[in-house]
Length: 81
Length: 265
Figure 1 (cartoon, one colour):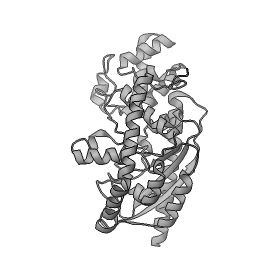
Figure 2 (figure 1 turned 30 degrees about the horizontal axis):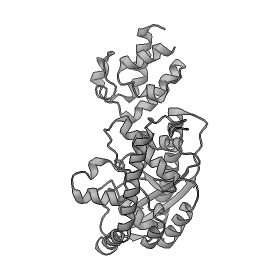
Figure 3 (figure 1 turned 90 degrees about the vertical axis):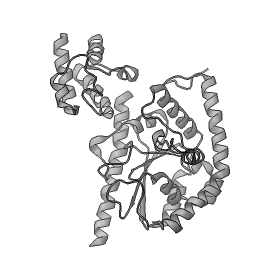
């Protein structure tokens, strides 16, 4: 799976939780999930678990804490698949 | 030597750091106990004679609470949250001051957000003496983990804790299943054999969330105990355990409103 495919899947996972639709239209690797996309921080756990299911990987708690941006999520997934 | 944090996702702290924190908790407990009766009677007086609060089935509620917390297992009270005074009202409702003075561990601890009381010395003092471990919501993972360490340490020693699984007062005035937080699941997953006691507490006139219940309010308090278990680990376990708590509270709320509507008809 290439980076663009991972990126597209991550965006699809994020979509239901995004409150700032304008930021979603311009989403890039540097986009911060909580501050830019305005995803409720409580929903980060749901997002991490959805990533685990989608990519068939396991993400430890301390790794999950580091997923602040779209790029960080892609990096973590790439390292695990 | 076994570390305090084995099999845990919490930050590891040195023995020295933990010892310092546990010592300050011991001082807080001693001072809190000294002030329990005088402070408790003042609050009792305010609730009963100034705010004119009433508790439905008071004797039954107190008997049920006594039974629920008389156990060797760690007890976590998981409570719905509608007003800033919920913790104090629950303490007033659940038992009388002589019981708390004799069984101080059963006077529940709280984990309030620091922004709710840091501005005045009086509030900070009452919070300190009133068995609170403040948490800074915007604080670091290390800070949050230390709060959890202290909570777990005290629970294992038989202290009862209150946790608001919704993370704040419900903006919908109902148990909000669409906005579940998983902190309660994380805490439950860290404490073996934890007994969860879901508490549904509501004033008859409480339509939304507020600072204070109205004067003359009558409260209903219901309990539902169970031992949350999950086959999952990590974040999935936190979510599963939190859902069990929230679903129980939701059922209790539905039952509350069914009874309320039934009484009107």
